[in-house]
Image (cartoon, rainbow, N blue to C red; front, side, top):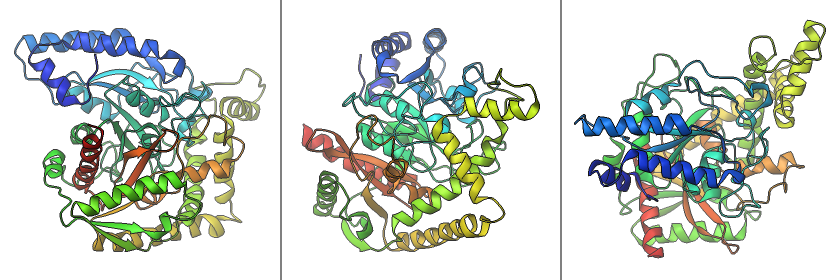
Amino acid sequence: MHFSSYQDLRSGLLTRKITCEEVIQSYLERIDRHCDDNIFLAVFHETALSRARSLDRKLSEGAAPGRLFGMPMAIKDNIAMKGARLTCASRILENYESVYDATVIERLMDEDAVLIGKTNMDEFAMGSSNENSAFGPVANPFDKTRVPGGSSGGSAAAVAAGLALVALGSDTGGSVRQPAGFCDIVGLKPTYGRISRYGLVAFASSFDQIGILARNSNDAALVLSVMAGADERDATSSHHPVSSYTEEMAGVSPQGLKIGVPKEFFHESLNPDVARLVKAKLEELRQNGAELVDITLPASDYAIAAYYILVTAEASSNLARFDGARYGYRSPDCDNLSAMYVNSRTEGFGKEVKRRIMLGTYVLSAGYYDTYYKKAQQVRRVFQDRYREALEMVDVIAGPTSPFPPFGIGDKMDDPLEMYLADVFTVPASIVGMPAISVPVGYDSLNLPVGMHLICNFFEEGKLLGIAGLMQHSIVSEKS
């Protein structure tokens, strides 16, 4: 049982051609068949089927179905669900069980979604390949010797492999968009504050945003409309009105659309296949009425440098709570308070998390705060100003999602700086807090997926999803 969109699934459910129980059973069986891919850290067999049966009863009793009635969804394992483990793919939280639901979980459940499992990820969302999980890497459904991207690699792989119709991830510097590009699906990071972060385990609080991974833009728009909006439990959530994203999508046309193309995004080190596919899609949009506008933006390598200073600083503060004293792992090898702190963190955290905590502590130290942290904040302001200026001239900024296609498992683990460059095109949108999306644009010479990255102005998710929808429609037409 396979559905290419929620519209197809919903039609079958509401006409009683299929039941929620049959749908969820089908997805659970498919997950069990893919267990070797290490995509899920927990699968809710019993609770998901029980939920499906209750939704079938609700429909048979004549109650109005929610907007996400029967939608099978996967959740990244850094989003809290009451009664379920919340590991963040870390040994330090391996047996921790959440005592409350995140706001997004409450809103999804209120609209009758069915949550089928928690997905694997880079530990505490720190990584670009899903190889930093304490529970092993995730395989890319297109080539199981390659990574699915990170840190939301498990969620991206779940959607790409047909194990969930839609999945939630978290995006700090590209952790939804980059794996979407690697897995041939849509990955949306909304405007910072558009979705409540209450219940999302913090990595870097001024960057973190819950994002959506889906096969198509319409499904992403529907889920966004359910989750978006202010939340009194999250002071950083925005009170900006929630749009009708599907209606806004319908109003988007390539005619007169101004697409900003930064020359900085197409440098010599860009993979030739990636450059070819992205430029071909831009040319296709131009032939259909869009205008391509050459623009200049600050070089993305400055964004990468500023980003890793700022997020490691915030991470070193946010992760201080995991000390073995209150919850999570506590080392058995300690005979005093200091040893408990040191040993619990040393044994509980993985290599990449330790690296970022140490970097963050260093840049916040008295002798280096002004040199690194303060300067990075100034760079962040420059990027915000330049991107605002650019988006006054164009509707959207376009470029590659990643400088290269999915790479092999283990290929970049010994070179952290090379790994960090996987996010070079996605980080700027995170620095400025604007909405961004990755959309499939084709396959390279090895038949590996390539994504295009789009950025719009604050709270223009409807326009962004509409442009993505135009691109996906042309891809479907080409394939048919």
